[in-house]
Amino acid sequence: MGRPSNSEERRGQIVEAFARVLAERGYEGATISEIARAAELRSGLIHYHFGSKHEILLALVERLQEGLEARYRSRLGEACDPERALEAYIDAHVALDDASDASAVASWVQIGAEALHDTDVRALYSEALEERVGELRRLFSDVLRARGASTRGAKDYAAVVSAAIEGSFQIGCAAPNVLPRGFAAKAIRRVARGLYEGQEA
Image (cartoon, rainbow, N blue to C red; front, side, top):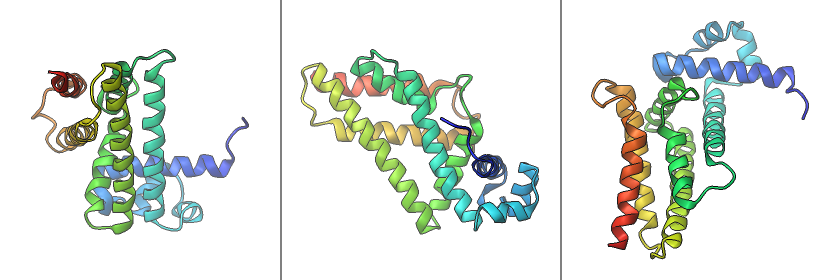
């Protein structure tokens, strides 16, 4: 695979700068001039590569989704049983490690806030969450089948775990001292295990 074009690299640079500014200042505070300053570019170059701040936001949502998918795949490994696959998915979202990106989490929280006001952002945000719930449902179904249990609860379990992930993002950004640092991965894995083991009882 060849090197990305200069235009692709520049767009990536702008999206990364936007993520940092968004995390620090929110959507309203992420002006083109602030994005340009963070990217160390002239404002005109921002306008050359993106028609609006909204376009940069849409590119950021896509980039965040790609980053999560890459984290998940790297944790999954080649020979992974269904329970480990579910844990890998949870860890890809909330585990703290060298690959963690606090600005990505903060950006995602800001995107969720913007989804309350902007129908285009809401559509992207909803689509991303629907994908997450769908993947979690598939993973829970695989676990339950492997354990010889009915998959009837998989949809509800997926909703619970997705809500726990989203809640950990929100609280971690809005009130970082309320919850113990690094609690989310272990706690949400434990919740997931309790859900599918409880169905067998």
